[in-house]
Length: 149
Image (tube, rainbow, N blue to C red):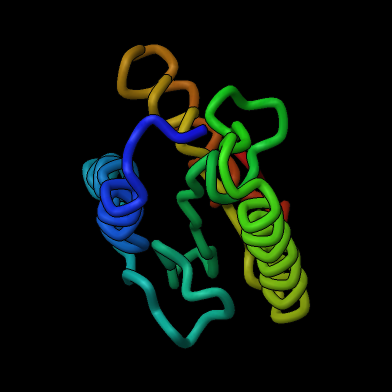
C-alpha cells in the first residue's frame, strides 16, 4: 500500500526528468573538467545518449538504477503498489536498453553506462571519483566497445 495519495504519487512521478538529471549534469562537469568535449542527447546516435563523445566515437548513458534495473543494487527496488504495471515498465526499459546496445555495436560505436549508484559513490569519495575517471579515460583510449561503471 502506498503512503501517499494517488494524486501526490502522480505529481512525484511526473517531476522526474529524463534529461539533464542531477547525476548526468554532475558527470558531464567531471568530463568537461578533464578536457573532454561532447554533444548532449544527440539524435544522430542510436538511443539518444545522454553524452556523445564524437572524437572517441563513444555514447555515454547515465542510467538511474531504479528505472534501468541495475542488478543487485539497493536502488533498483520494486514498488509495492501496481506491481504488474511497474514490472511491465521495467521489462520494456531493459529490453530497449539491450536493443540500443546492439544497435551501437552494429554501428561500431562504443557504449559506456554509468549507473546512478556509482555517481553517488564518486560524489562522496574523492578516491572513488579518481578511480572511476581513470577507468573512463582508459576505456575511451582502448579498443573495448562496452563498459558499465
